Image 1 (cartoon, one colour):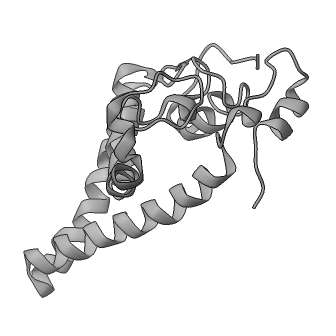
Image 2 (cartoon, helix red, strand yellow):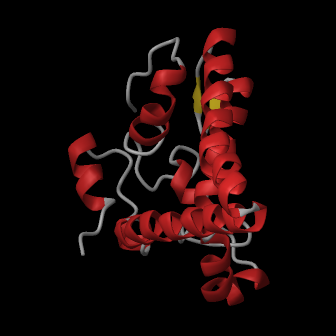
Amino acid sequence: MCNIPAQNTLFQLHSFEHNVAHHCNPNELGYDNDAEIGDPILRFHPDLKSSWLQRYQHITTFILMSGGTIKWYFSDLFSLVRGHIGNIDFHASRAEIAMCVFFKILRWVLGITIPAYYHGWSAAVTSTVITFAVSAHYLENVFIVNHIQGPDAVPNPNSHWAIRQLEGTYNW
């Protein structure tokens, strides 16, 4: 297990989500956020319980992946307010939360409101949704093929950290 500082802030949030919650214990249920992502609709880890919904996973994965970056856009704000992301606790000050809200609003103003002024609301919203969906597929298709592709990608939790990194990753 990795050592986790007692207090983490907004600026460490994404780093901790990926580097601590994922890479300290790759592909281990209860430790790695990615191992349980989409459960119970999607099943990416061999030790998760099967459900009838997963019979259609080849369709639902494509549909749900389209909303990945929109989900990330909002989930980090919710994580800041809760003080918890995946299996990591942290503290964010009110100033940090306010700054996060400010930049998220600024992103929408620059990405939707200004284009809507020049091109109309439907064009602005449509282009934003398409941008989010394309970026989600780009990122998530790279991630999915490199992680949790079967029982041989679940490393022994007693192995050295570096060995777990190699055993828990596929290269394509």
